[in-house]
Image (cartoon, rainbow, N blue to C red; front, side, top):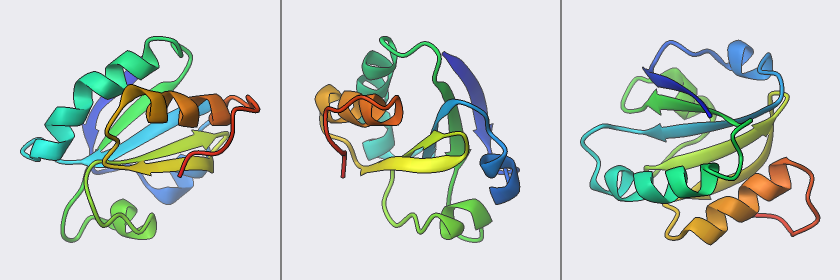
Length: 113
């Protein structure tokens, strides 16, 4: 897994230019829901080492979060070649994250919500 650190400098054009599978994780370092989701996200990503994980620090005045209409943290946006394939808000289990990852990879397991 290629994991970048938290960033607030990513633009929508840069997201559109991402090649291959990627997961953008919107949240903050102090969010309890974000902290609780970290082991779930890590466990699901273990089976998908090719997925690039990008953490985006979100909050008031942060453009990328507004462009993706992020309302709650963490919000996970799954991308394939810069296009959104699935989205999860406050994931509660590894299975839902794994399902979204499978959809991103083109598996016929169904769509995540």
